[in-house]
Length: 280
Ligand SMILES: *[C@@H]1O[C@H](CO)[C@@H](O)[C@H](O)[C@H]1NC(C)=O
Ligand SMILES: *[C@@H]1O[C@H](CO)[C@@H](O)[C@H](O)[C@H]1NC(C)=O
View 1 (cartoon, rainbow, N blue to C red):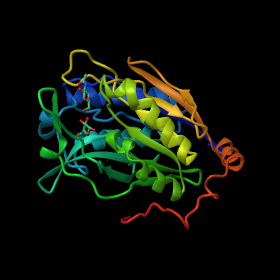
View 2 (view 1 turned 90 degrees about the horizontal axis):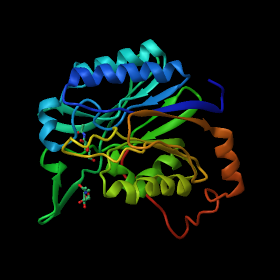
View 3 (view 1 turned 90 degrees about the vertical axis):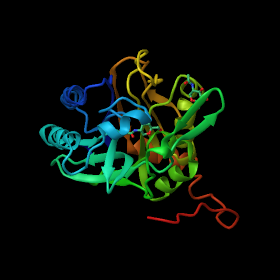
View 4 (view 1 turned 135 degrees about the vertical axis):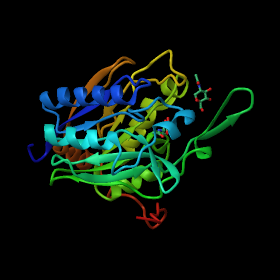
């Protein structure tokens, strides 16, 4: 891994009803991405279980002992990569969380992100989706360091809509923000790319999203279109709705150039406004 550049891979995999199958598929895709030179590999939201509040209790597992975490740790170690484990339903102290785990090249657990913003919506006669009936929110910012190369901030899906979270990550030195997510067929075309480009441009960071591949037959139809956006706000790698791997070079020299060309970071008027971090 050179000092200023590394290869990111986003695994847009199809997710089915069998957890064992989902894990095998994830391991196969991880190996393929590592063989193609990826240093950091990201799985989609809910890669081990179908997406939907009805599935969470059945598929949930404990982090230390669950089969998904064992598989992720082994895959990171075998392939000597950093691995962001999309998200899985986690069982902890009698509660369920939507949780993303991060693994280092030695197979060790580097970070755990529990989805901070739960998605609750109720439009009478149209759609009702209440994550908070089932899940508990996380209360922490989550980032990890890839050696000396890059600090990475993590959010899950709906977390991407909250600009403050991204601003705080950027201020804390994150140069890449990763959002495993599953937008649907309405919010996907309308907001998925726009949000990524907004978060990237505002903060002059790389932003990447990893969605499951679309399955028309599942109860939740995901938009797909996993992508990577540069600090210039440009989509530098993307895909359609089908199963695929998206690769991009994360170039921190390029990021630095953009920051010197348009120095918003130093020209903020913190005497007039401020975003405040209230927790660690
Ligand atoms: C996490 O939340 C998202 C909604 O934003 C949902 O689609 C997904 O199924 C949840 N995943 C888990 C593992 O709980
Ligand atoms: C997708 O989610 C949005 C926001 O919750 C909702 O308004 C819309 O009806 C959903 N679309 C589909 C196709 O499920």
